[in-house]
Amino acid sequence: MLEGAYGGVSHVSSVSKVSGVEDGKKLDNFKGSSLLQYDYDELLFLLKDNKMYPATKKNFNRLFPGKKGEVNSYVKQNEFSFANKNSVVELFNYLLLHK
Image 1: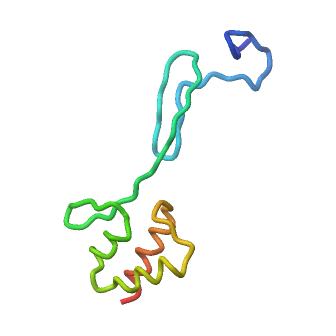
Image 2: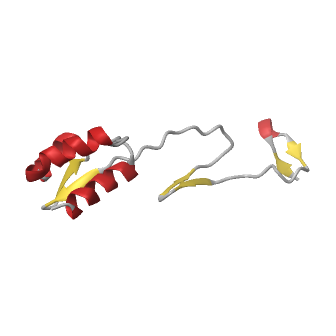
Image 3: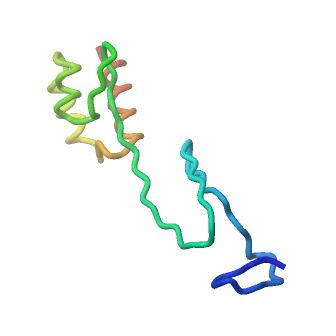
C-alpha cells in the first residue's frame, strides 16, 4: 500500500513517493507531503579572462569587437534568442569559425 493524495491509501502502482526532483544537473531534495512548484531558469554567460559576461548582444559585440556587423546580421537573419542556449552556442561557433 502506498500513501496517495491527502494522506489516502492506494493499492494502485501509479502512486509513488518522491524525495527529490532532478532537472538536468540540478537536484532538489524535499521532505514531507506537499505540493511542490518551482521555476527553473538557465542563465548563459560568456567567459573571458576569468570574467563572466551575460550572453547578450551587447556583450557579444564587446567580446568580438571586429565582428559587430556579423553579430548583428546573424541575429537578424536567424530565428535567434539570447535566452535559447542552442542559439547562443551556434552564434558563438559561427563567430569562431568565420574569421
